[in-house]
Length: 323
Image 1: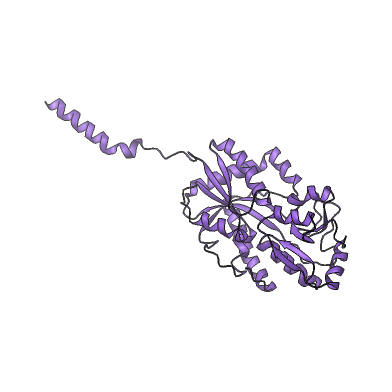
Image 2 (image 1 turned 45 degrees about the vertical axis):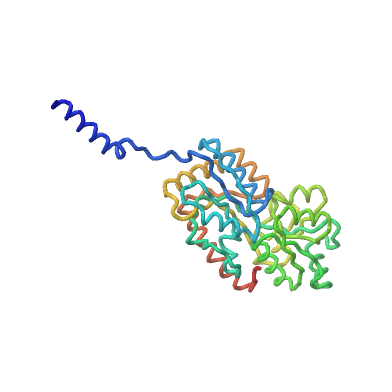
């Protein structure tokens, strides 16, 4: 009888302590992870996110799936990601537009870039390029400016996001011209209309435009950067064309909803940085005229903070208002 009582007590004690002793934290990731992108397939952000997603799916043992939710300069996707559970299973591929420009530009966004998101890892950066249709009469940046001065407001220029609008507005003020800016939901749509001469030109990125420029269906006029892009070596910078100070860089990064466990953030950063350093990924990035920086979580957070401050000032200086 006494032995039976001791057995019962032992079983009860083990039952009481088993959750603390035997419970193990769930391995992350144990199910698919979605990466929300605010632009259509084929955009620079989408391309970079898919490249990294493929790599870390293999190394982390679970699928990382890119989900495109374009619209409102990326703000629709940002809002979705901000409201998602902070468990590491929803990530957001944010860019300069959504994280640093939309808010000071006056857009009525339903998320706070600083309060609703935690920076995870740097994804890519590149300088924009001014592109015209092959049939546009201005074959150089100088000739394009002359055309714009002769026909103010009559040159149609496509713009996909807030960053591109800031670049276009800054360029117009520096050159003393007026373009007719036409908003587009995605780069592919804008590029198709440029190649079809439905619009005269657009602000784009080397990764998205190089093949069309090489085929002769579009023309690169100038790079808005401090130096020529090795992917478009014959394209001058705006500084070379006589318009210094327009060295504008667009970047993208991976973010998580605020409250996501720090251990998951660090794990993701480690895997994404490792993926970016892989020879095949580095080669692919180089071929798009972009670069990836191996920032730690702390370094990337500092970078984002400085970019928010920089663009807040620049947007207010340009006086643009985003719809």
